[in-house]
Image (cartoon, rainbow, N blue to C red; front, side, top):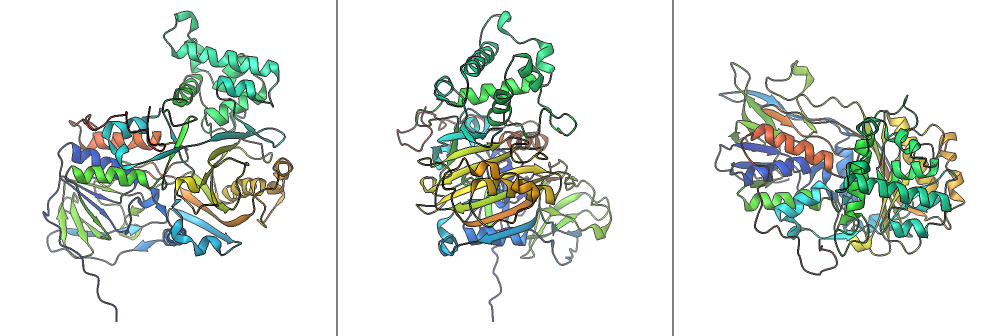
Length: 537
């Protein structure tokens, strides 16, 4: 007979803020609030940090996806002094498909650190890296450079992204005229962003116009426009088709993204390109913020489920939470991970509960494990399939990041590849991810007419890697909202963390309107040791 679980008593019982879930937004806010002098209790029902942003061993990742693909309700709870509203864990994932072609990955499950929210990386000059350096949490993390970037052209060939002067001159797939066009355009962007005269500035009218129209105005070829829009600016939707494009990028935004990309190249002496990836996986980032929060006095308790939220019996305002241990804790503010909600059988949600559970869009994600690299001699790389590059009905980009054992996400001699694409429904998401998998790997993935259209790419990849294991799943996208009970956003569809950081800072400022979002610390110093895996400008 199993021993009943013993849960520790938490002291004190009153806090300025209670946070449930150790995902990245929750961890950033807990760390910022602790740094501002607030008393913070940070709980997680899981035995690990990161929640939906975690990096997990292979078997644990599958178990987590399976358990969060079905609703999980807590039994009704009572409280003598407050109305007790049970929490429900709503499913954020669906249509999980696992394909195993070899026992080797499963046999080495504990040697994997697989990202739940991949693919993702950092631009060397983006706001998240700035915050990592400002807060000093870089002392808890190490990084490796993403070696190369590739984009699929109209013929289905993977070509290097010409993202710098030297890369442009070395590129074999561009004509001399296209090389000159691209150099001239990059110089124009540099002049606009630099301290040049007003004559070098792009006009306000052009800045407000769609970026694709400005690129056409500059005389760039369709091939160059595709490279800039999808491989450098990282546009999601087909910018040439305004009828289906849900996110038309204007010139101002496009120029800013180009400037971010170019300023990232060479920022750190030990990073070859614009992008870096954390050793041991993206789950290291929320854990680093948690470590900083703990130093500032935040109390952490893992394996501690919340079974109910306590509300005032008279006016329905939030008062506190009830733990699975039966203990009741109180705070004026509560932040919960996006998987928590209230049962619809209770009617309207309690007063002062942020409603952020309406998921309109989805992101399809895939994870592939193989023995060989997508490109010979390349360990870590980014691959972009622009809209319509795999099949005519493809209206969104498909992003792919391959990682090797040198970033400690898999055993030596194996490669992990993450794929993602925004989609409106499950079927569309499956078609997108399977099309890319079929284009990159050799494996008996089920094909249909749309997927087989990717076969033209196969002729351009010598000895495509054979799949050992793969997973495909659909994740809901929610934005988060603020109230006395606030909900954070799900991992978004982007490759970087900028939107997640912006949303986290906004929520912090709602909760702590008079506090600074991370004051500068004396330990935040960019000049680190000359180790090959640290941020070393």
